Length: 274
Length: 143
Image (tube, rainbow over all chains, first blue to last red; front, side):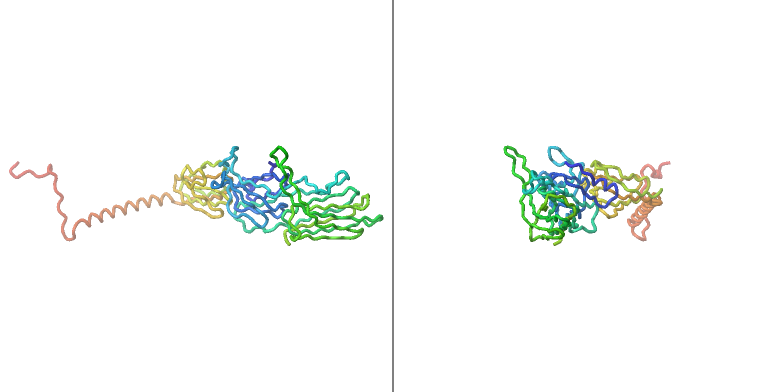
């Protein structure tokens, strides 16, 4: 279990109206706890994940543990109890807190199939997905329906062909993506860049032979675009819900020369709005 | 006597705790600021919190009770919560109680007297109560 940096009980002691669980995920198996009762739960505006599972005590459920799904635009309103003097009827007799786990698959070690470590390909940026949940301690006045747009900005891009930088960005539940690449490498010899954009859907991995432990999540790669950007030019690409729903977006940047020219920039904006 | 206002943070033990012991007549106002569940009652055994032995506070709503001198208010919860507590003394609360007792006593006496009069018919003098035998006068032939 990850070291949780914030506790709901401290929010009560600090007379806050809500508890915000906001931190980076380490893995898809992370479990977070809310040790006070809440009146409403919703996905926060800066969450990179779109779907969560919430576990809480319900004596009418199997093993007295019930599960509900929490997703963007689908908050839970109503009292969920944390009964710390009551125990889940498991072998460990754990206190009955509210537990939250990501429902989206997360693989912070994923690399696309085109990644060639022999040629020197490297991960230039892999922002770890963040969990953002709002747990309201009193009746909320209103709930944010969608997440904020998120901008990933990478200035001073350079390549040393054949080593290509890869950018692996969270895209869970997003419905719009705008990519802009500005090629400022127009000093002779002028550099042409080729961007390869893939949409990635993760799925549970296969079990290891002879064992019961599942392997790492597998990936389904969907080609979205190949963008050629001449020296001194700017190109953009837009992907919407019609192009598919993905867990990750990967961008591979290939330069034509084996020279370093850190004068180009990449901006990626993802949004819940179509 | 003075007004006492404070925020009470419930404990997570699931055990009944004493919230207030009234030394004089007071009005206690409680408001739960968080989600709860928090139960309040005048009994020492309120556990478990959702058993119904106590009364669950509602988030954001005032609950008022008048406690006579000697009464106690207990609280129970299994998570940490904020409860706004206001204790206001009721001036002359004990004297009002004494006056009420005197009033009840007078009313009872009046009813008793009214009951005696109703048993006797109107315009007929009540009969002399019979003398007990020991007090009866001796016959005339005895001296």
